[in-house]
Every structure is written in structure tokens, then in C-alpha cells.
Image 1 (cartoon, rainbow, N blue to C red):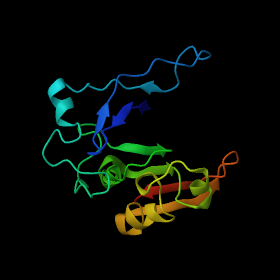
Image 2: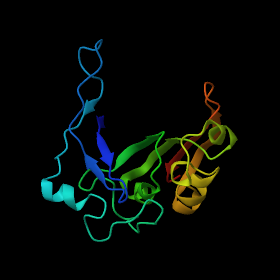
Image 3: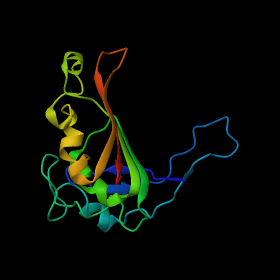
Image 4: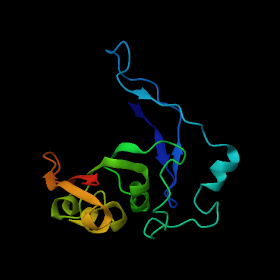
Length: 171
């Protein structure tokens, strides 16, 4: 199994490889998951993928029209895409092209519901999911996914609501 360490470019939704982080696990003699080394972007590629740096950049609220372009071109399709406490809608259009048939997408991020609103952060529509949005917009039957779980979890310490969403591409 390989784990890819990347960052998302704000605005464009491009995924840019980062060098592997230093291991913080003091107890394991050998890591159980290998963090795959990816080619790092060159200076020209980096400036082209910064917001406003290349033609065709889109804001986070616009559909990118990149539904056929994988998140990390040139790699084999992924078996799992995991998104925890992060929301950048421009990426969701490209998940289908990145997952292998039978692959899973798992989301655990904040919902625009009373507990999260009362806590005060994150705030703003660009950072909060609407209830049912993942299934309706990107990962439902119409897009070829089978939803296995779409529940709301309440964070005990803060009272904020989080989505617990799991869908599989294909039947």
C-alpha cells in the first residue's frame, strides 16, 4: 500500500505532491505504510498551478469541468480517497477519474448544522457541507456510486456535526 502526501492549491483545486513528512512514529521499527515519493513540481509547474497563475483557473465554488482528469495524473487509480475535516468542492469533480472501479471515497468533515454554527468555526458555505450534498452532487447513484453510509456524527467536545460518508464506485 502506498500513501501519497500532497497539498491542494487553493482556488484551482490542483493536487501537488509534497516530500514525505518525517516519521513521527517512535515505536515502529519499520513503517507499516510506505509514503510514496512523487516527483516534486518544478518552479515552472509550481507557478502555473498557483491561483491565477495559469489560464483556466477556477474558484472553489465553480465547477471545474475537470471531471475526466485524475487528481494525480500518471498514477494508477486509487482504491481509497479519504477526506477528513477538509472541503474543497473543486476536487470532487475529479474523484471519479481517480478511483479504481470498486474504490471507496470516505468523507468526515463539518456540516452546516446548528452545532457547528453555534461553535463558530469553520464558518462560511465554502467550508461546510450541506446535509446530503455529497450524495446529491458527486457521489450518488447518478454518478455511478453506491452510498454505504451517510450519517451525522456529533463531536462530543464541541457539539459540531460531522458527516460520516462512505461510497463505493460501481456496484
